[in-house]
Image 1 (cartoon, rainbow, N blue to C red):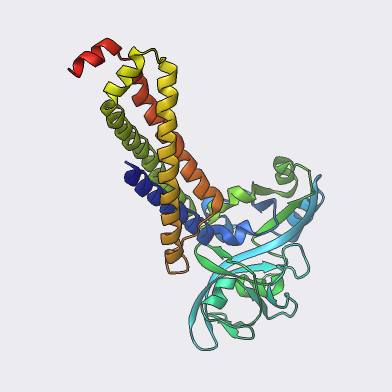
Image 2: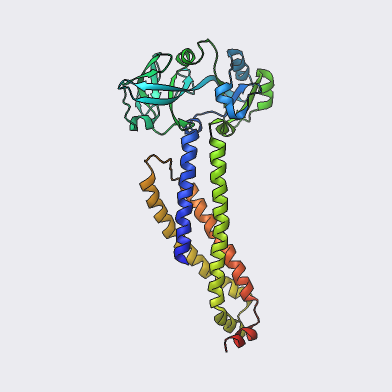
Length: 349
């Protein structure tokens, strides 16, 4: 039984890692932005917000005047094909930001955005072979950019590596129009609550919080929904399997429990005894399974499969397995604890 629980724990850890990896690959670029909400063009659909929305300088200014808003900046986002100086094809999510604004990322290596052709890239691009000082040429437009810095961590959008560049250069690549951007990036004052509806009415935008904006990443909603559904089914199956094992285990102890009842043990004592033993088995098996899952996950992480082990997610999965296992064990123990001791003893003759 312990081996089965441990195997289920391994499966839960691996599913948790795949789920976290997909989320990071889809929206890590957005998650790490110091933004409270985004304001898109009025009526923009969520699934195409970053590809269809266009806002102007007046809308940005309108948001700056809203109560609770500390800063509002134009933000550009476009997916492009490019190639490095060595001719290697690169897919990029270009984030156009105003240098010096709160959207301007602080690089771990190199320098911040400054010159018109500067580019600060995600750490994952350096891991893929790009180097500081390399030239990146955007296809079709022929705009040449120079890698001047790299972030400390992975930043991706829609499974594509993010690269930050000055907003004016982004406009040249995207539309050629001055004062346009994809969205208004809004940061609230500390402790303040934004009235998004009032801001939308004043600026003519459709705004959404940073977490809601994750759904704008291509495929994000479908991927996370699928993995969540798989996890729910796994948890339900885990409860049934663990409960069935404890039922068989408790039935095998039927004679022992009947003797305890015959000599005066209460049903509450039998329940506590059964659940305590189940808890010990679940804790030991989960610990072994989680350690094995983390070991297998370490081998997977860093490869082509998006995989990320996050302590809260792993602990949540282990806690759910133990809780569901205890519920299954309680169901089994309750049935046996209510048995008539004389009938149970008679059945063993």
